[in-house]
Image (cartoon, rainbow, N blue to C red; front, side, top):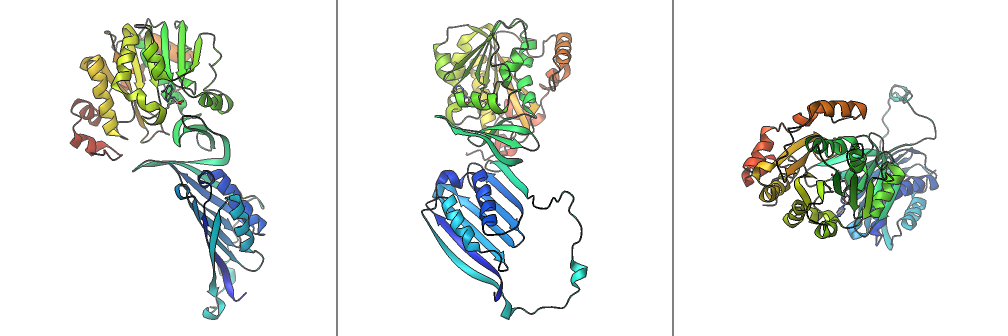
Length: 443
Ligand code: SAM
């Protein structure tokens, strides 16, 4: 060959948007395309961007294969770069055209490093040779570097995963996926947003349940809207005093995915005190009788998709109606740092319905949620205050139950808010929101 390398620039069109957004399929196909062409794969690094798009590279002994996809256009830009004669990049081209179900592909081959244009310089090859044995270099194994990325407007969270997609189904409401992350265990995502991971779900689930249970000492009936991963009811059912816990989850695939791949979170689904309903929580609360529940927990995802209606004044009004006279509503109330505009708006709504002095905000550190700082709201219909609680009982319970986050001190500490959160809650002006919001405030 009269050149060092062959570089084929490829454009694949009319590919299935599904496949163009499937990081696991794309990574597997790119690695297989290299191997089929006779290349020796060194490692692969792939990123799935949310809401969509994949970028990745397969490093081969004979150079690299790279890809960037635009699922929204059914389009992929692929680079096939090989050096030497042992690998035929066109074999990879044909393999990938099929693997991506491309309607058609266009390509251009460039000869890279035309020998007649190059002048070899004499240098001591031995001095350059890297003889160091990489730590866990097992010949023939490739190091895969596949990343899931939840990307919002201005911030993103990336988690390395094994590349094996444990669960992926589209329900009528959302895409339900489970990834096998290396740092946080199995991770449930809905429409590309992290819902919970095996390694930090306890923070969210212990704080959304035990804070109200130790301040509302007489709760007998609890309702959870959302929460299809099962973590919230698992924690509630630790409290023997609860005679009935009802879970209303709109999407049965979330329950299925968690039973299969997050069993510790889904452990209480067969508890005899649990009334598990697969139904729209908005319809359920609209049809629910007045004053039925001591505690209503809104364990929803973000205010998008099926969960949007769970962030409206109408919905909270219905929740208020269904609470007993001294009932308490707890919600996951987003992050003061992430989307401050949404944070301020939902607290203003709670205050209109429950009254300014009856609404409290508390925080918890959840590493896999945007900004890592998440909030919960505590709104009481009666006079129960979150800071009047049985500390001794809370300490005993936390110890006996082997809780990993909640205890009698964090219960109080969680309500000690930093000044910027107080400012957002008390003044909440556009200027203050823009000062603190990580995401654009769309005003
Ligand atoms: N901890 C998570 C978070 O903060 O993002 C939320 C966990 S949980 C998985 C959220 C659940 O709410 C999802 O399973 C979703 O299907 C469910 N959901 C969304 N809209 C709903 C509705 N209208 N009625 C009942 N469940 C709903």
